Image 1 (cartoon, each protein chain N blue to C red):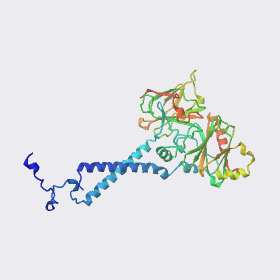
Image 2: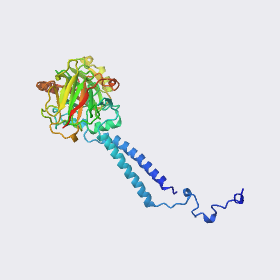
Image 3: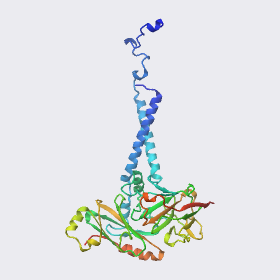
Image 4: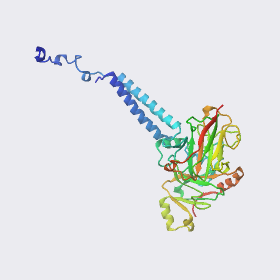
Length: 229
Length: 186
């Protein structure tokens, strides 16, 4: 033990030096700057509004309800447009004034990508083949990236299951292209650029699979890209 | 209190993120209350309430309502249950038709198709619980044959979809949809 450790410590904060800088920073007397505080609060509020509004806009504008049921490239939203829908679906559907296909009528499935995971492109040629879940009637429609119908060469924009050529085993083979094709031809936009986007909408009418749980394990058609210009 | 600049920055970022999350939720929740053209409003443009109004064909460039099937023809009817029960009556000679009942917010309340209807023609009565108890005191003769749907939704609309198997059938389907009834009972 040295002498220094035995000696009582010098008073750190005596009355005479309370204003000196020896105080810990957290309890040091502080004079606020009203302008600086105002700037900081304004900055926080402005940044937060920007972030909050833009993130909401992006989610709604994408037009993809959150609770999707995916089967390969196909997505269905069985709960959207009902009383059990999540707030994002409600916002998307009411903003677009969309009347959903109710569960007693059928189920709509949307594909935005092909089976390999590439975004659909209206200038390409696609082969859609396989089986659909059992349904009394189904229709397949090609729409643009915003879900709108587009002008095609023959004026027809859809295929219906009743007028389809089928393979002996009941499966089907559809070619989606701008130019006429042999077999089942689903016409795509007559004049489209890749940025217009493309979606295939498959509507199953009077199908037993209108609830989400029943969609597990059903076979859906494969979408294969055949070629692009 | 003077804290380290790093602590101030962290608090600032946290405050921004929390506030951003609150604003995000408020924006998403407020959209349904601030839409200018709901499906319920859009249908009013096609004709008077309480009758089926044939919607124009779904074609590229003139889609009256988004997301309708171009293979179908549609007719819509707006109603207010405050004006009395609504009786739907339709007979459409095609292989598939369906009807969906929606409330004014566009949520599906009830739906059926021509197979689940159990008959060639549709006859469906939509009313509130009170109206049903009044009706039961003096039931009409054909009440047994009707599909009776009790709902708490006061205003809403029905959308009737009919499949057009071939363009040559379009006229028949149009006539059947225009003959469909969305009127009062008795």
